[in-house]
Amino acid sequence: MSICYDFICKYYNILSNYKIGKILLPDHKVFEYVAAVKLNMIMWEDILNIPEARLNTQYTVDDSGIDIISYDLTVAGQVKYVNSLTWELLTTFDGFCDHLEVVSKRLVIIRHDTKISSRVQTICKIIRLNMIDELNSVPTVTINKQLKYSKLSVDGKIRELIAFGRKPKTNDKFSDGQNMYSFWNSIKQGRKLNLATYTKLREVPFMMNKFKETEDDFQIQINSLLKYIDDHITITKIDTIDYKLYDKFIIWNECKLQRKCEHEPWVQLLDNFMLKKDYYDHLKTVDLDMYNLATQIDELVEFIEEGINIFEHDLWIKCVNENLIDKWPYTNLFEYLEVIEVYILMTTNFPISTYDEIYRNILKEDPSGMFMI
Figure 1: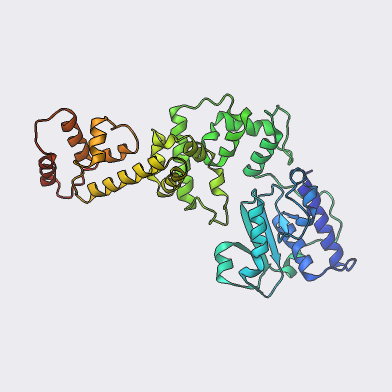
Figure 2: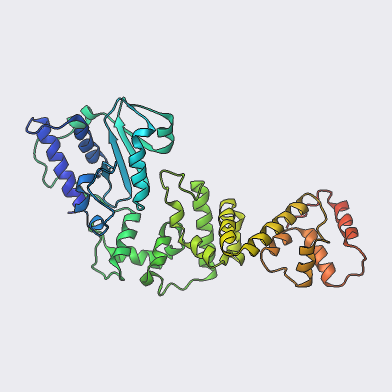
C-alpha cells in the first residue's frame, strides 16, 4: 500500500474518534482533515514522511501556508474555515507555492457558505465543502484496509523516474505500485519525448541515449509546443492551475539557447507572438547585434505591408548582394511574393534603372501591396 493510503486511513480514524468524542479538535483542524480525506491528499505536517520530500531540504514542517498536499507534490491546498476570505489571507500560501517549484496547481478549500473576494476567485481554484455533510459520511469504526490507494499522476511518475536515476528494469515499480518499466517503455516506443508534457525527461541521459530524432520528431515537437501554449494562453507564471508551464518547455529552452529557431523547421515557433518576444528578449542579452538586425527587418516587413518601397534600403541591398535569402531574419522578408519577384530580377541583372518601376507595376495588379505566399 502507498504512503498516501496509510495517511488517509489515519485521517479517517481521527475524524471517527472526533465524532464519538474520544478526541477534541478545533473546527479549523477538523475541516483540514475533512479536506484531506475528500481530496485524497496529505496533511502538511506529515510531509517529511513522503520519500520525495525527505530527499529535498526545502520541505519543512514549519508553518508554510500549505495545509494539504498531493502525494506527488504537484497540488497544494490551503484550507480556510472562515466566514469570508480575501487575497491577503492567502499571500503566505501563494508565496510558498512559488518556492516549491514542483507545485503546479493551487487549491483553496473553504466552507460552503464562505464569502470570497473577486481576486481569490480569479487566481485560485476554489473548492467548497460542507463540513457537517462530510463528517456524516465518516464511519465511526476503525478504518484498516478498506480504501483504494492513490495513483500517481503523469507528472508524479515523471518526477519519480527522474529521481530513479537509471533505466528501469522489468520489475521496477513506482511508489504507488505501478510498473515503472512499462511507463518508460511507452514513452520510448510512443516517442512521447516530443510532447510538451514529457519534455522534462529530455534532461535525463538514459531517456535520450537512444532517442535518435528525425525531421518528423521535430515537427511533432513544434506542433505540440504551439498547441500547449495556445491551450494555456501564456508562457509566464500567470496561470495558477499550471503556473510552472514555461519550465516544462525543455524543447523551447534548447531551441532558444542553441539558436535553433533561426533555422528550419524551428523558425515556425517565432510565428507565435509570445515565443517571438521571449526569443527577442533572449537575443537582447546574448547577441545585441542580431537583436537589432531582427527588429530592423521587422520594420521592413511593416513597410511592405503598408505598401512602402523597401528596395533601396541598405538592408535590402545587403540581402541581395550577399545572397541572404535563406538566412534569418532576412527570411521574414520573403513571405511576400513581390519581394521574391524583385529579388529574382535583381539577382539576374534584369536591365532596369530603378526597381520603383517594378514595384509600381506590382501595385497595379495588387493595390494593397500584399502578395502573400
